[in-house]
Length: 199
Image: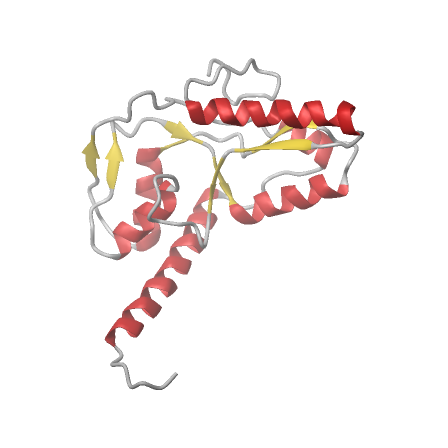
């Protein structure tokens, strides 16, 4: 991406099958309007994170880091960790969806992000601070074709939806970490309790 934060009107040139499917769906939504007389909006999410994110999938670096930090495992960073992403908290994304539903006149593509770049290295440092730990990450091989910089401009969302992110990254990470602490505590208790046959 040549322009960061990236606006909606920046030319789309997806370099992966995943990116191609995203653009294809946007084109379908744009085509349905004239064909069937319906309106639609495509919300382009930045990197969404927060409670209940699956730490076992490929996506969701925040959840993966939380899991590893809380279970005594070393977080693994792909490549040098200088790659940047735009991390937007899940509650802010939910609010953006509600705004879009309330405004059927808004069509086309709208970015839902913070406009703030954060490197994976910075993300790791912020999470270890929030956890009160000092953990040196392990660096693994870089993912082939991984985008170096990714950050979305939220200006159009502010203008057309009246939406802006409200949860700073530090606060969102603290909330997410606290959620996973509770989850892992419950898991440990359940594993420790002997089965009595009662339900």
